[in-house]
Length: 232
Image 1: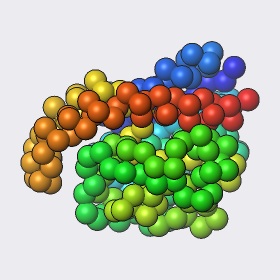
Image 2: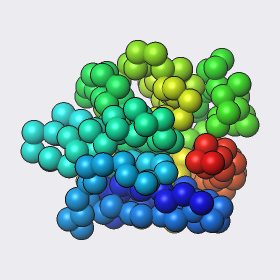
Image 3: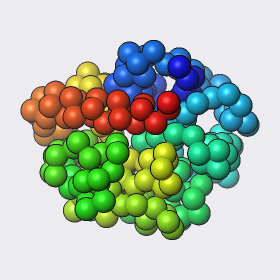
Image 4: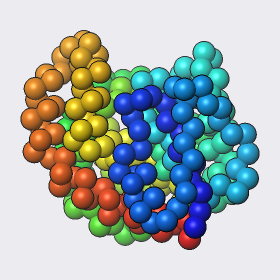
């Protein structure tokens, strides 16, 4: 069994069902809590895989948040070592930056949106079991183009590159597929000012969460298990 490093930036954006599936498969989990002052490791060492979670900061904040530079450097090391990587939202942006792609601010995409599988996703070892179309929680305002040499996997109407794979084991996913309904409720409760500023109705997100979270959680767990299989 492997030890998997999970980098968490904020209290409300934990690994959710990803961690549950890792522990259920018998792997060890080591969390780095940026919000609690933990330091990002500077070497891969014996760590078997890396999961980088979301957060309200962005790649452009590297000048004032030194941990972002450290995370990008660590992502580069894991990618070079060909060890499994899973970046969620901010984590996907950091992975894209580590691969040399510019990440820039754009229109906020917050709420449950239809997500489409792109042609390569139908044969991808991790995403192939997802349906062709499904709803997912999107919560971001930064965007990036497909990294050079990467395979496009998912898109939304606003986000052309909502998921990608680089090499055989590095995945970046913009949708928050790791969240349970309770996690979404907590995130919404702590983000009312942001939602109001973005013109997003809280009641709409909560209603959509009630409708979509349970079936999407089951889809996500199948996907996490496939990614965990890369740790072998």
